[in-house]
Structures are given as structure tokens and as C-alpha cells.
Image 1 (cartoon, rainbow, N blue to C red):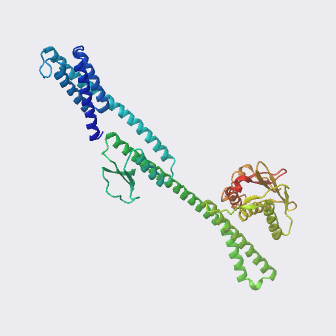
Image 2 (spheres, helix red, strand yellow; image 1 turned 90 degrees about the vertical axis):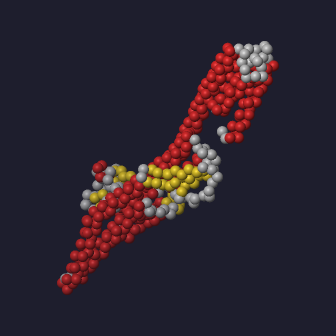
Image 3 (cartoon, rainbow, N blue to C red; image 1 turned 60 degrees about the vertical axis):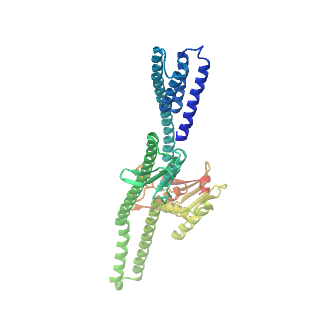
Amino acid sequence: MNRLQRLRVSALALLAVAAITLFAVLLRDRLTLANFTMVYLLLVVIVAIRAGTALAFLTAFASFMCINYFLVPPYLTLLVADPREVLDLTVFLIVAGIAGRLAANARQQAEEAQQRVREQEILYQLTRSFNQLTQPLGVYDALTKVLREDLFAKQAHILPRSTEPAAADGPVYYLLLQGGERIYGTVRVTFDTPLKGLQLQLLHTCVSQAAMALQRIDLTERASKSQQFEEADKLKTAILHAVSHDLRTPITIIKTSASNLRHFHDQLSREEEADIAETIEHEVDQLDKLVGNLLDMSRLNAGALNLSCQLNSLEEVAGDVAARVWQLTRQERIQMDFAEDMPLVSFDYGLLLQAITNLVDNSLRYEPPGSRIEIRGSLSDQQAILRIANHGETIPAEVKTHIMEPFYHGRDGHVGLGLPIANGIIEAHRGRLKVEDTPGGGATFIIELPLKEAASL
């Protein structure tokens, strides 16, 4: 309550005392002194509840003077004829003061309870808002909004995020946004009037909650970066392991073959030179393929795979893979069977072609010479299904759980990258790759592409 409001309430209290006194003067021949004091005492309690202890004491003293001057004989004088009425007036003044004090305390406790409820509501909404944020900028905006709308601040700024505002007409508070040993900024808040104890405590609590939210976001970002560094370190270690075997072997063969050509050129026939040159070319192709797979695996782990999705035909992709196999082997090693109602599916043509090529290459490695790989396309539950089945050895159960893992060493000792790359490409399309046993022996790779979700990529 400001000074003007206090003066207004004081005037109203004195006017109420005057009105009661006028009413009592008119009825002083019919009512007793006890009746008058009870009315004045009621007024003191009301003033105490509405305006506090100080104005209650003022009202009690004014009532005491009016009773003594107008209602106790001799009238219009402060003298008291009957000594017993001196005791009555003294008791009235003491009781009025005590009643005013108790009423004021009850009012203050009620206000504090309401303030605490309001504080709890503000802090609950603020904490709930902070828990949903993942960026520091959102925390800054939420904090300044609460300070302006709920704490009625004239100005609220986060320094040094915002420039120092002009001097404000009112008390200014500076609070640190500090979480642990790190300081995230300084809160500058301006109010119309100085804050009291509970208000100042609420301000500090809001700023502390904001600092805790900033610390949580900071720790989450650090943990994420630490996890990324750990995954990158694992990838680097796996690549080094791959280099130690799969890269060193073709390099050794290439070096040995080139050395033989240089030292034994005069002793080799044209057929032998052609065989050595073909060996070098084959190992270079294998080396180029392995390096390409390593780069693709690094892109997948780094999340740098960008999709360019359009509506395409899975049968057309399978046809391109079959044509490539024919060019390499000059044999029909693939048999295709697609449903007549196969729809177009949204996917990145080049990436899915690479994934299917990797799966077919893996299947050809174990397909018996006299049989063909089967590629079948069908629909099931709003999904496009592509099955790539070979008829070689059945994959053991313990191997199935690891063949999709990057840098898993197969039974031949080589690092397998084709299947993990295919799996990463299909997962990037929100699809799924799994492996099942082929009836009669062998392995069947199953690609599931959701039609609706794939179309939205």
C-alpha cells in the first residue's frame, strides 16, 4: 500500500469513527457504554484486517477519545466523573489495541499464504516451461516473460545478451545466472517500488530455476558431444582395424605383382604378364571398393547422408542390379518376380541402388554356381517388401545378430561393410532390413519400406 492509499484509508477510518460517534450521541441516553465500545471495537478489527496494525491503533485511539469526550459524563470534556468508567476506557483501549494487532497478524498471514500459493503456481509453470526447452534462448525468453507478466517488472533484460538499457525510474536489481561454477549471464530487473522479503525471494528463486535449466541444457550438450566423440573414437579404432587387414592385403598383392613385373619382365610370357596385370587391376578395384565403403560408413555414422527422394519403381532398381551382375559375370544369376500391383515408392534412387547392390553382392558370394538369386517384390500392410534370397549356407543364429554391425569380421576374416551400409541407407528411408533363413538352405534379406512415411521424406 503506497502513501496515497494509506492517507485515503486513514481518512475513511476517521470518518467511520465520526459517524459512529454521531450515531452514539443520538442514542447515548438509551444505550450503555459497553454497547458503544463494542461497536468501536468492531470498527477497529475491520480496519486492522483491511489496513494493518498502524491504522488500527489510530482508529482505536480516535475511538477512545470520542468515547471519553462525547459519551462519558461530563460530556464535551476529557474528565471522567465516575472512576469505574476510567477502568472501562482503559480496558477498551487495551482490548482494541490487542484485537487490532491480532486481526492485522491474521490478515498478514492470509496474505503470505496467498503469496506462497501464487509463488508456487508461478514456479510450477516456470519449471514446467524450462523442462520442455532444449535451447538457452528459450530459457532467456521464458524467464523475462515471467518477470514482466507475473512479477510485474517494468524492465527485464539478460546481460550481455541484450544491451544495457537506459536508466530506469525505480529500483534496479542485478542477479547472476550461475549454475555451478559457470555464469550464463546477468539478469537486470527494474520495478516501480522496492521488493519486500517474499517478493525478493521469489525473484531469486525464478533466476535460480533459470540457471538450473541452463546448466541442464549445457550438461546435455556436453554429454551429447562426449558421446559423439566416443562414437567417433570407436569408428576410428574400427577403421584402423580394417586398415590392418583388408587394406594391407590388396596393397601387398599389388606391390608384389608390380615388383614381379619389374624384376622378371624378361622371363615372363605375355599370358603371365596379362594375369599379373589382371590381378593388380582386381586388387585395385577391391581397394577402391573398400575405401568407398569406409567413406560411406563414415557418412552414415556422422549423419551426413542427404536423401533426394522421388517416386521410383523397385522393379526398375532390381533390373539395374541384375544388368550390372550380367555385365560382370556374363551369366544370368538373378531371377526377378514382382507383384503386378506394385506401386511407385518414394526413395533416393542412387542410395537404394547401392543398398540392393551390396545385398546382392553378399548373396552372390554364397550362391551355388548352378542356381540363381531370387528378388521378389510384394505389398503388405502399407509396406513395399523386397526379398533377396540365396540358396547357399544358412547363416548361424549367433552370426545373424552381428552381420549388420559395422566392421564385423566374417567367417573369411574380412571386414563386412556392405550389409551395415545397406542397413544404414534403408533406416535413413525409415525402413527396416532383416535377414531370415531361405527354405531349403540359404539366407533371405528382407527390405521393408513404409509407403506413407517414405512418401513424406
